[in-house]
Length: 154
Image 1 (cartoon, rainbow, N blue to C red):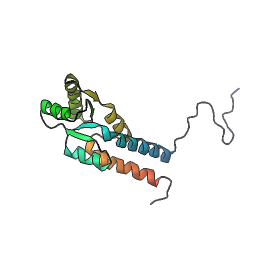
Image 2: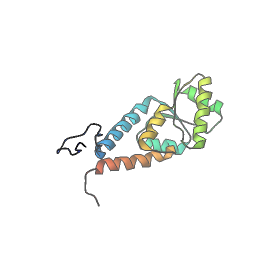
Image 3: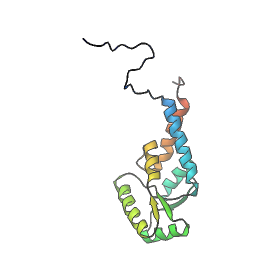
Image 4: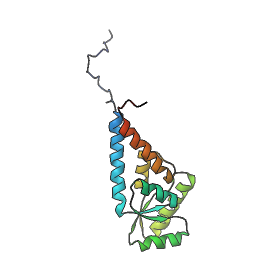
């Protein structure tokens, strides 16, 4: 004999996953990103170029930036002049950027720096970018989705 799978109104079967509410999901992402952006104030970020800096500043990241467009020794010297021993890598997530990330992580650790890559990975998981200069556009799209959620906009 088969058991009936019908449930009454509002009843859930075991194993039913809770439904996500889109607005809350976007709001949570926005809050997390804004916390990350404000926490970056005291950080030193190594980025690939000036367009990355412009995009990050446009979304409110007010960190100390060093660009990775010089010899590794000169980059290490510029990082040393910041007085910080902890460096956050925010390089692109394409093949070249990942190669640079691997290189700079090893090189800067040899120079005595503590290298952090989690900040960039977390930001990428929230925004879904490949190149750091996309951050501004992706953040604007996410912000718009969060603000328009539930509104009948055509």
